[in-house]
Length: 308
Image 1 (cartoon, rainbow, N blue to C red):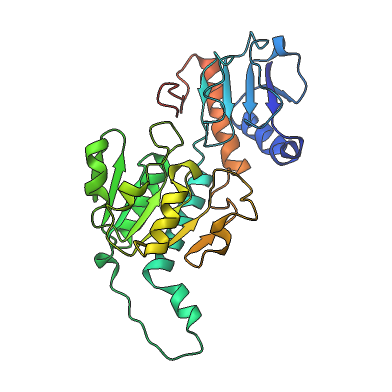
Image 2: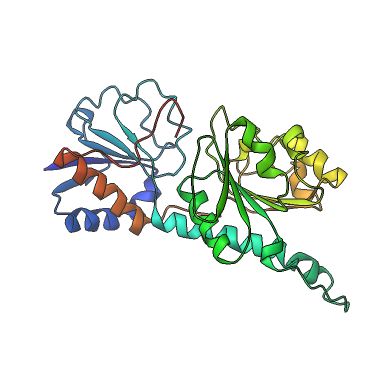
């Protein structure tokens, strides 16, 4: 019998218990899934970084910590964690991110906000075709690649930037410190899908916002610290950035007195762009446990030095 500790907030247990157990059975695994094992009896930890488990030293038998979240920035610095850490790459989350990003890119492209605001006046607006609206995606991991594919299929010219070199069909790829400026140079819409690491913090700052053509729009469903908030507010006030749709923030929930709430050129959404889906995420967890028991390499193992 394999012992798996479910280490997440109590309300998540009701959501995940049945899908996880079904996924274990489907993978031919005999797993005892509980919330209250003795640490020395645990083989795997199904984990959320906001759980009560923060000291991993007692889990001497644990073969891997399997994160339920896509983000791992809240756990990678934990010095007690010596076991392999696997981040969540959930097909359900990926699809929901594609739908959210595509929807907001089209919202900007078709000037839907403007049409709604002027619905009592007859002021026709004919948008350009998608092929005339360059989009840049910062971050070309699983989420960025999926969004880039969807947008290219709609006809948008898509550029992407990543820390390391990537080669994607129909996407103009840039990388490294020298690649950021050309990636942003003609972007009318920018989508941020980078992880939160020391290297990506404030990647959009006063200088890089200036790389964009005047009137560009921003969409951030990635991580709050990717943007220098002070610089973005100044760029919005000057008109360098025409509008920003922000789903993630440095402090969440976003404080009621934050300038973003009242700014006429900002749309705030409450971290809803993509959520781990219990059914599909459970299959990812079960597959990694199957791999661990078979002596195979885990998938989606976090590189501690890179932070994701």
